[in-house]
Amino acid sequence: MRHIIRLFSGCIITIVGASALAAGQAPDLSATWVATKDVPASLPAAPSAVFGERFSLAVADSEVTMMRPVRGSSLVTRHPLDGTEVRTAVPGRQCMGDGTTVASMARVADGLTYTFISNIPAGGTPTLSGVKYTFRLQSPDVLVVESMMRESAQAAPRAVGTVYRRSTEAMPPPFKAPEVKSAPATIAEVAWIAGEWEGAMGTSTVEERWTPAAGGAMLAISRTTRTTTMSAFEFLCIAERGGSLVYTAMPNAGTATDFTLTSIDADSATFENPANAFPKAIRYAKRADGGLDATISGGEGRKPVVFSFKRRGGS
Image (cartoon, rainbow, N blue to C red; front, side):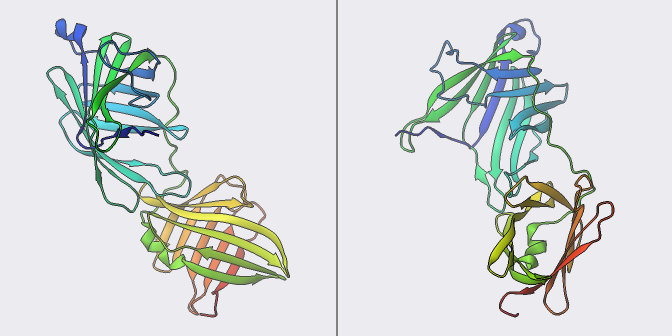
């Protein structure tokens, strides 16, 4: 099976409108653009939409705002039209840390250029870009996006394109900001949570097993047992998001609930979600004896619950 390999170094988008330029005016690119199955007139159709199924542009005198759908929301990037490099956090998938893109835009005589400089995965190293995209406004409502692709690492790249049409279709809403003020932190600052922990809760045993911090995230599973019977389990994770940390809990593999880091020091970290019924806050804290306390609290009429853990193996 042949794979299309896109190059991602020096990605440049040139946006032009022939009729507007003939009249000495900048092309009107402020719109939502939706990919079609139409074949471009001057080059082969791309096997898939070269710039995604849809995106929007809002062009002002000195700045361009671009929106692209990412997992049910829209990633919004704002670029000054002077070539300034802009770093944009790209929200990771569930339990994965944010990535980062580095890009710039500038105005040229016949339109605009967008340069995709690099991609930086969570906890990784930059990957230089390599594909050139050309946006040509062929009519007020038709935009052709061209891209160079190759079918294998050894093959020469070839030009393909996608036809986009102006649309009134609404873009997904931008990513929602946390409902609490987040505390700046990296995953390395909660690396002390890693390990296998075990504690008693009445006649039950509660375990949490956390992976070491790596790639902008930590993963865990919690299990509650009574004698030989498992009564509950939970998937957990902590990931770098928006310059802070987000703790996600999935009780019994159910709906994920996010808690944003609001306070951190060398010995504790507190995550909050005021909209959750219970708990509204989760706090991990080191104990002097080498143990770990996990406290869940908040909610009308609910008392805090403390899970006191010892590191498995007695240390």
